[in-house]
Image (cartoon, rainbow over all chains, first blue to last red; front, side, top):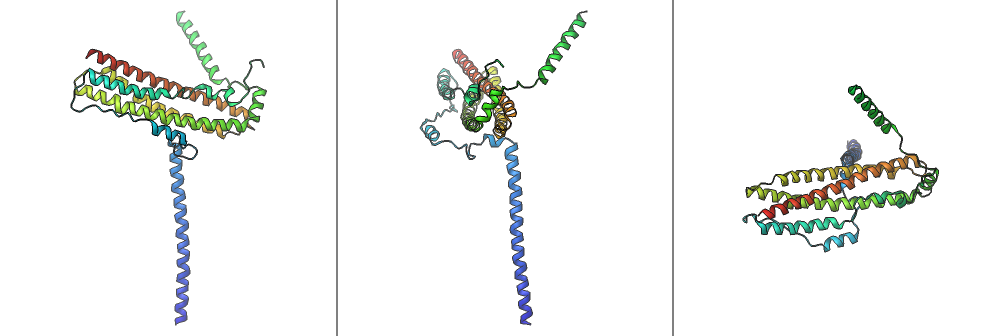
Length: 128
Length: 169
């Protein structure tokens, strides 16, 4: 009787182990499938190109330091005061500071960067 | 008679358009092909650097455009409405800025997709395909440059309109 019980217990243990492994495999498959779907959405939506936290695109230390040095321009209209020449002057002063920041980025997306010369491709002389 | 001439001009125009569309991208010289093959790895590394720098430019400009729109242009227009002041030009300008900001982000995605495809091309074995794609990427980059210029002009226009409003006060 006890031998039979032992056999039954062993069979249960084996089945339990198998079920555990099966559950692990199913969990891995589900995780892989959902990750693949998320990655496909992330890529196809174009969000990947707007994300600078992906490997290889993280800001350099120098860039972080520069950002930290910049003083924040904080401007808000008063909820009580009416618009007058003085508030407009203040507004213009602040927006101009912001525009100066935009202008400080020299030649963004200039064609020169992808020229044959810059990429090291021999420049066509015209006579072929 | 005049109608016939118009048809003729129209046909010539269509033929030119069709020829323009079907013409292959200018072939590259043997010297250029050799150059691409020889410097393939260096070119790809340069393109990767360009990709990273452009990503930085997009974040930098995108953040400032967002600040200008949400912290300056929109609140000013709301304030003008609250003060019952006419701001037709400014509202129109605000819509244009918002549209251009969206176009800027979408064009950047399209440009980066092409740039990524370009980097993935085996330039050692397919220099023609590589150069053809490079031309396409250059066009996309030119669009980005135009977007930046358009946005800068819209912001300048806004400042000009606000200055005009200030003068009237």
